[in-house]
Length: 106
Image (cartoon, rainbow, N blue to C red):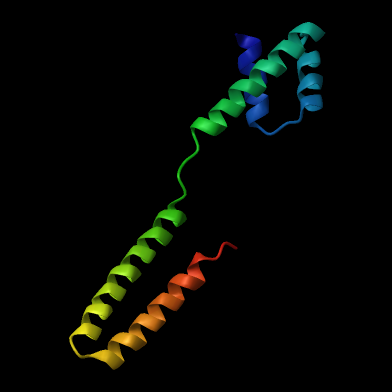
């Protein structure tokens, strides 16, 4: 497992396959061992990248802002129905235009 740990640590440092092969040859590994350890380290490193991916907080904030804007627009719609038409309609137009603008993927 020492060779596998070594190849994984090199992979995590961001070295390419050729650089890892050179370093492992310098350490005295055989070609068959190098190929085996490279294949296993790639699998383990990719699995770690996939399963340890942290959720993006910006997406949560963006969804939270959209939810708050929708709740606020519901409140403005409530005001429209109770006679505050000008304030409510202008506010709805403003909030819905913000939501529409924020919905486009950049």
